Amino acid sequence: MKVLTGLDILTKDINLQNKFKGNVALLCHNASIDFKYTHAALNFKKLFGSRFIKLFGPQHGFSTDVQDNMIETDHSIHPYFNIPVYSLYSETRTPTDEMLEDIDHLFVDLQDVGCRMYTYIYTLTLLLEKCIGKDIQIIVLDRPNPINGIDIEGNILEKSFESFIGLHPIPVRHGMTIGEVALMHQKNWTKKKVKLEIIKMHNWEREMFYEDTKLPWLLPSPNLARAESTCTFPATVIFEGTLLSEGRGTSQPLEIVGHPKIEAFSYYENQLANSIKKSKLEGFMLRPITFLPTFQKHANSICNGFQIHITDKKIFKPWRTGQLIMRELYHHLGDNFKWKKPPYEYNYTQKPIDIINGTDKLRHWVEKNDPIERLDSFENLETYKHKFNEIKIY
Image (cartoon, rainbow, N blue to C red; front, side, top):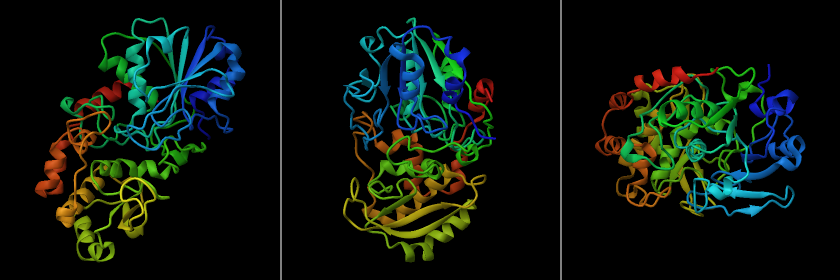
């Protein structure tokens, strides 16, 4: 049975629509569509008419056309809807009092990817914190976690490494829907509550990957054109903290990694394949490839590296796989391997790899060439799992 998102439920339920009597605003992006591919803003214009007064966009913009970190989006007036579009990835990541004026109901319809390093959950939680003490209702139109709502993996972010790609003590693969993130925030990360409502999905089950939902996939950010890429994202996003390419500027971003100084076929046959076998990690294959990024790192330089092909999503461990590949490439490349220097996501002092990982311990693990079994010591998940079980709504 096809999953219905929170947006689908809202557009079908007249009684639900009639609950919202005042002025309405919408935080959304390119992937905010219903099952008929109609954008949420078009639905809101039809449902709420002149009471639909403002739009907000997260990182990458309302149109989801801005590529990179720390490339900001301007505020504007939308040429069709003729209402303000405020960017929450601009001179501010938190909405201002002026932006929130005259809003009674602010809907959030964002497709998340289920990974701590993805910023939309922080746009949501900064909005929740800003609305403390305001007479504004926040309504989250819930959407699937595309990498399922059961599997939890990775280290918990340490407070000293908080940033806009990690504001809360959650693991890399957190298992929550964006609606559940809002509930987690209200229960565990704030002392003062807001007026919050979650419009739940129908027919979504926690073990589902995105393709199981029968919903259309539209890219929620410029480099996630395929739902399949969300499954490799927790493995490859960490390479943003290095000068290796994670495939931006190619047709396979965030599924591949590489560097001009790698000879992928011989390295795979003579060393890497054996390291993977020893790790006992399963559910994927690495394929040696050659690629040419057209922008970002190593633009217009031939890179060699590897594509991650998932053969069994149920047993694939992306966080561990990414850390293993990172460790192996660090020691294979030697002086040609470089950690990226600050700034990164508005952090001007700490190493980008450390704020991506939410700790410096994993960088040290890589540099020391420690055994993969040591990753177990970084996954202290019991406290998180208890909180997670308390807020689950499916």
